[in-house]
Image (cartoon, rainbow, N blue to C red; front, side, top):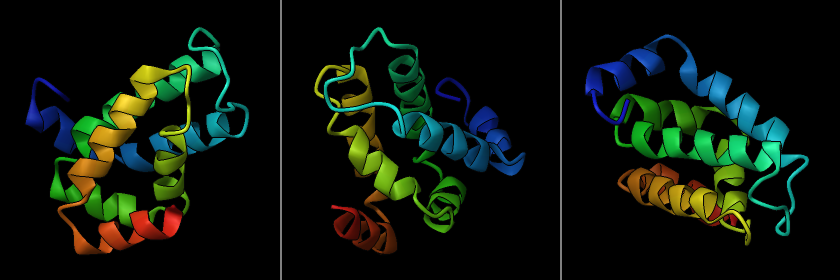
Amino acid sequence: CASSSLNGEELVRDGGIPLLATLLSRCMCVVQPTTSASEPSAVIVANVMRTFSVLSQFESARSEILNFGGLVEDIVHCTELELVPAAVDAALQTAAHVSVSSELQEALLKAG
């Protein structure tokens, strides 16, 4: 989706946000701030966050992100992964992209 906006929009249309959000949620249950970047769950979190970083540039994805409970909280919690800089970077990029929406700004503030 980074190289083609059509791919990103198709991923959103085909239900990609809930699938990715569920995967992220499951992994966030097992990763801690001190989890090594080489742990499989941390690798998955980093890759999912990279995908959200790109998808969050699309309005359709931002509205899906807002409607999927717990996703904004997981994005914020990804910024705490001290040993997984790729996930932290992607989470910060995602937060920046979703911040164009005042509703998502409020959700980010509530999430911490």
